[in-house]
Length: 330
Image (tube, rainbow, N blue to C red; front, side, top):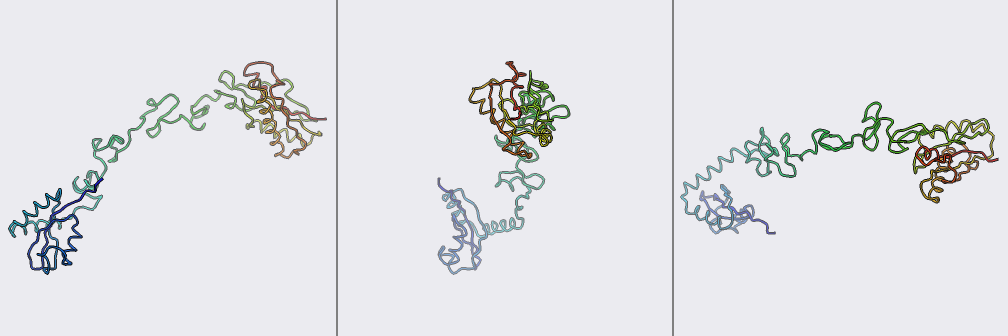
């Protein structure tokens, strides 16, 4: 790509009062050449030299034609050009971003509004990527104006469709945030949406009945089983609270060692469920050890899906089988 060359025609006022017309594409460089005696022969020895008039030209040919006109022009008319240039110099162009008219902002592709250059006056002054003029600034078209413009489960926030909620406080009293949508407190899509001791049944959180044999006596302590969500080995708040209470009692109970038995529901392969049951048992072991029970007195084992507490084949049965039972070794 070729760089565009800007040509101009200029008038020099010589020290003897005469005027010289010339053309250039670099006025500063050409003036220096004149003053150093390397310019036109006419200007040599006629200093000091001063530029008193400049006209832009479309190209070199146009500049040459205008130069020829100036050289044939009477001195009186040349002086009128100089006087006009001096008059314009006495009324300087406003300093950007200040302006008086739109041409004062044209170099920046803007318009003059109330004395200042702004990006737009109306939508017609904006480009397709930002088609709307708002407060003299071109902006993108908002994705939405109200929630009705968004998909189900979304709301309109600052012109964009976003998830209805990110936390419970976005939903108000008696409701919770579930998968980005506000739902009734009892609604659920999995056991993880419900607290400990509760399971997700028919999209509702329901109390988890105690499984047969889920509680064990350790001395004077009634130690209950710890329950988990589907394919999960983390302890929720209710499970941790239960283990805290068990720990307080177990500190005073006589036992040689506790056996932490990890179980799963029937879904999945035998190998996978043995590993999952072991992770659940290890989670309980690490928590109790962190509370203060000696690790050497805690033994984590896994039975996988081989010893279900409930033989059923539905979610209520599966939720009772996802557990860790705590028993003593004699």
